[in-house]
Length: 196
Image (cartoon, rainbow, N blue to C red; front, side, top):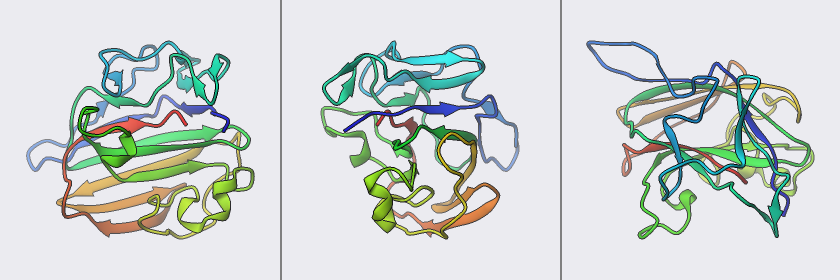
């Protein structure tokens, strides 16, 4: 399995919805990985880089199917009700994801995707998972199949908005509502960028 590039643009912003205060909290300053760490560790691995105001995974140092210094990265902070905006682009045949409500507890959860729902980031036309409808870009991986056809091809920016309010989740891709549902069990955790 090849690991691919996930890049996030300066517009990566996050807020907790609060009745008294509705301010944006930036999760990415466009210069550093401050505010993030690799799942189960204290710092971000060296394969995650900030280049031209984007956060990206450099896949050049592969060890088998993994990338040395890669690993999924999570926010230092946990969130419950939120409004997340970001942009992503994936390389040819790429596969990744944005997972939320992540529980940063590797002694309990071997894999990050065991801990929260994932909005799929995928080259639908090039990656084999594109043939599985619940694994396509914008879908809530293996949970909710969304409205199809709103993703842009590999190498182009896709704008995502994920909103969580009192267990109700809405996901938009490039300005179109692609998923909507209610989560009843997990309602707080970290935001994760998958390095797959």
